[in-house]
Image (cartoon, rainbow, N blue to C red; front, side):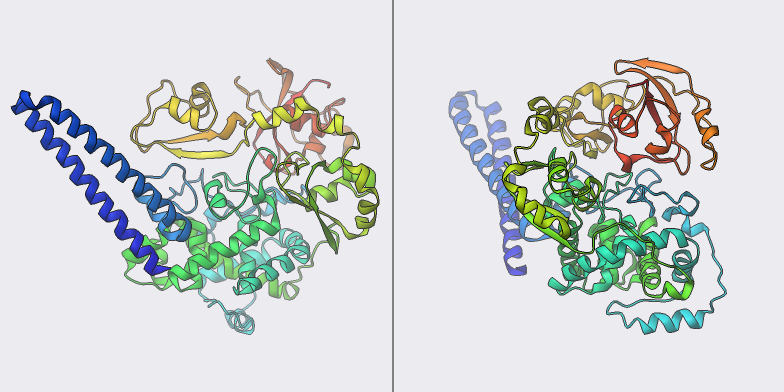
Length: 564
């Protein structure tokens, strides 16, 4: 593979040199033309021939670059880096700011939030925890783990061990409960690729085992893939499906990424770091430090990644020794055994639920990749996972399953709206030389005005290197264009009467109709918020704002519609 890639590199170099020669020839020809106007016709012909040859050489360069991208993941990254890139992904150089840094704790799977334990990863370098457990015990336990991956111990690692094992017991209880279902999937996947099973702890750091997790940078799923990297590793994304949210397929993609990273660095700690910040940033740290040892290059890594390696040790330690710290797995309603079916027709999860009796919520939990609860099996084959206890019922009613209420669930207007809406992917686009708003808008099927509104641009002027927020297809999270009014006051869960009398913000109007602005509080869910507004359901609120339950967070301003 390396020999083949070197050959491709040489071809690109030769083609680039030929292109330079062709450009030089054109320049010389133009100079000659100015000196001797009598040769004008002949020189125009030669210029046209040289331009055609140059275009041909450019096509060859592009062809070999694409070949290199397909066969060598690090080459793909370096090409993106040196060409300036089109989209920021975790495999490109990322500017680590509060806006784009992933926090460890996301909106909880099963819609449970432990707000008092939400310690942002970025703030860990300013915190120092203490514990009654002596260092010697931590060291002994780490040695007992007999990890294939080297697990260091120092004050930084200790801080993360205490964080996971002592400072967030409720959170870890949920993670441990989810682990009983997801960890066997990860272990089987990593074993298939011959990778250390300890890598499973990365999913705890990335998403707290939340398959619907979405970072502020736009990474999605349990393994937090950015759009471009997900595509590169074969995950399918369209208006109906986002396989980054599929725990099985995303774990497989993560395994292949880590396999590639290990082949590049030959060290698991560096491979793990590259998963967080990209191989390019790890290579930079190696060059600056002059070393390939993780703790030597640690000060040269992006700020968030410096905590990623120690967090990995802390999460892995707690998965192993949670009992010693009195942490018990929470009971999570996930079926112990799951069956899979291949779907080749349009199928709605509600059709399956209504005819088989399988709870809709369980079907959604097992199949989070279907964004609208629709499996578009008429376009390609997809997998449906259902609890094993309902497999017989599925087989018995399969003949009538696809036609059950099909005119309702597959209404042409609804299907067209989904297709035309784009996938709503949040992209951080870096402006390149020659870009203008109209060109960018066409590429992502949005309008110039939308780009200007999302980025608070006062004019159409943009500059090379500028970063723009874009929602692919124009399907952006809803936001009021008016100044938000003050949100309602939080009320006690133990006092329903207090909830019903919660003060309401002034009613406002938009093209969507009348609505009230509400500021989300810690512990809120769409269900609890809806209780404050008679005649409005949680689903009404989600539909009105164009968001789902994974997007709600404290401080967010959401619109509460008038009675639906």
